[in-house]
Image (cartoon, rainbow, N blue to C red; front, side, top):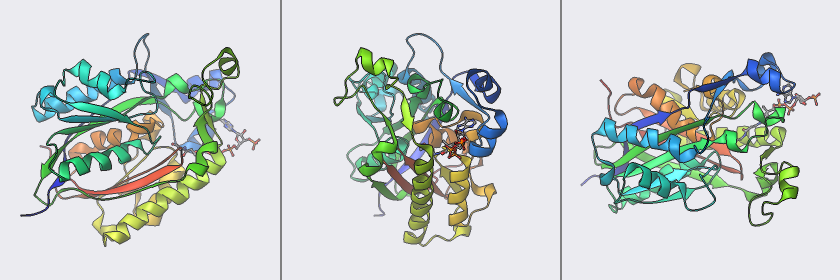
Length: 332
Ligand code: UT7
């Protein structure tokens, strides 16, 4: 009997309607469209508007979408992992909230926080539950309402991030397709460069932390950029070598969308031309855990069964990693 692998059998995603363009940002902070495009490749990003709406509300659209596409009821879902850094609340897990909202009454779920690498970590984790035969239908969601933790007076961070959600369904396959390998890495000594200072157990929320604007993303862009290039390019090349893949064997690179220059450096290191790189940062910015499923969703119709695909990410922590998978289906 051939090995059981976890195959992505459905993908869907959702972004809010409201568009925050570079031109709008020019009115809010001292920046300009040319600088943002040249330094990041971002033109606009989506923002979730509406009181009482959070990460779970975006995720629900994406998860219901995959159920519809696959023709299954949410009750058939065994397990749901939500990768996010902007949970609806500190606890309970947003995964539990999503399951409740969609009526996934037979599923258990939890959140996974690995910053921008969360979706890849969650996919690798979920694949093990499939490979062991423990579960048959697992949903992995990557969703973030980054606008809830962005300081729109800080030009160094507010230009980068946006809101969005994507989800995939994993099911067992003995067809040779599915998730073949993963390399996951982390280095906590990098935590100082990218984090949220207050609101955790070390520095609980207080008047002082709010006044000091410590509930927003803090990022030292330059060092993060340097480590991101090294990490993402390094691990992407490493997973190719480990699996004897040459550039011509790889159909697609699906990179985390943090900065076009990081993506270009990664593709170059892998020997891939731009025609093999999924890139939608221009329209959505960095949606943190949403970036990779948002790409797969937009490119779904171009993917062919058996395509070799490399997913690759780098994020706060630091965390980084790559996944090698063979696409499992053709879309008509
Ligand atoms: O997804 C999680 C991981 N995160 C990342 O991968 C992000 C990695 N870092 C980056 O993408 C880049 O570092 C940024 C896009 C955040 C910044 O680009 P940079 O080329 O590293 O710029 P910088 O921070 O070195 O700033 C260069 C100059 C500075 O001015 P001076 O000191 O040279 O006069 C900044 O003050 O650009 C200035 N600057 C801006 N100018 C116009 C910073 N932000 C802006 C802005 N508009 N929005």
